[in-house]
Image 1 (cartoon, rainbow, N blue to C red):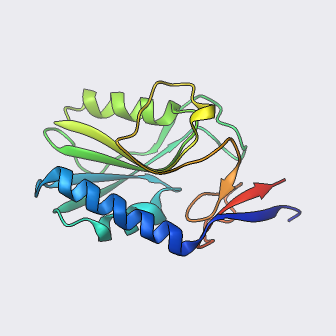
Image 2 (image 1 turned 180 degrees about the vertical axis):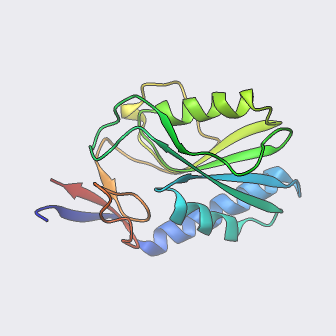
Image 3 (image 1 turned 90 degrees about the vertical axis):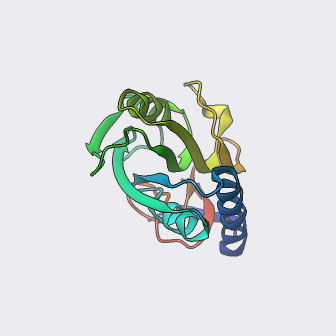
Length: 173
């Protein structure tokens, strides 16, 4: 491993921001049940922490969608690796995503859940990288807006490494 990692957000900063997001989402949902869809693998750390900070009824489901492989750039081709276990028809869906980069994955998921009959679909992303956006996707809740750097930690990886870092760092390759 020749990579170097510089801290961008500490574990305490990330935790505090997730608490704020959970409170905002709970206030907006006003007691309504939410179908929280965690986009695997990257959003798993974030989605679990977010669910713990929400005060509304939460049903969690998981979906694995990929457009990266082992590269640092999106291929643009989105494919479902693991689908949901239950239907989203008539449900309030909240997609928990680790990072919005090109936006292609979330654009795909928004269309997919609308086709499946979700009552509404909202997005909560821990990070957003607007300089890389290719698809017109707007998140309803964003933890942090970051510049065009490659980040790891808190579920974010580089070739499946560094997900377990308790903070978000910039990877220097």
